[in-house]
Length: 297
Image 1: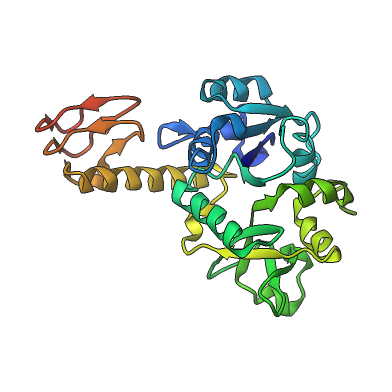
Image 2: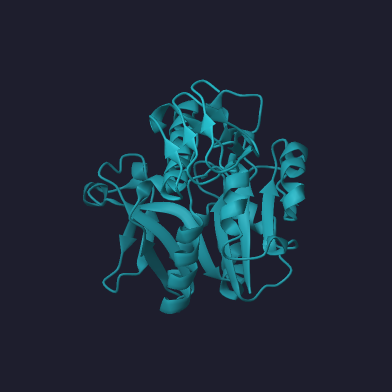
């Protein structure tokens, strides 16, 4: 009984684009499609709700073939407000609810499965995905209490000198027990500076009610890369294509100079095929076994 909410309503002004940020492509798919596909590792598409706002019709048109549901956030008033907007779209208010973001295409299915397993094993009201980075500048810091639970999430600009030394950062990705989450979500108040409702406030709200949030730490910070600029988009695209190349090579495909080759995620290539340098294989291309794809194809 797991529902997944994907927040995908934002404008993405730093992309400098007329197109919604989540519709930009990496690895041959839009960013939000990558997230939807990862989410199917933990639930059925009928239990995935995507919160749309900016260019909602276009985003929904891309995702409708997947069979997911939608909720509209007419005004972008923060992550807490976005989650509240899908209260009616999430049909069951019990079980578990995972919150993801439409601009994090590097999240793997394995990581989402381990988040769900960790939440179930620790039996807390919520589990927050965290990671450690060498340089946490600009990230919200996760402050743990003496039991190892999340005591607070502090934005970089609000950190004390001691908190600035913390390298454990907030991903914003949660797995909640749905019932207490829906019960207390309305207690989020507008931020004094921005006027927006932030999901990070749930750490303090849950603490006030004696509910614990477990910190689930993942090893690879790259999986949490959120796309805000074209530079980060290029970085994500390179990582996704490197993963695809490794998958093919481990399955018996020879790729000569893989750093020069561009292969979309849905491409299929048979065993003992050789792919020469500077090849591009896009879309749903299928190549059989024991073939040779020449340079520049």
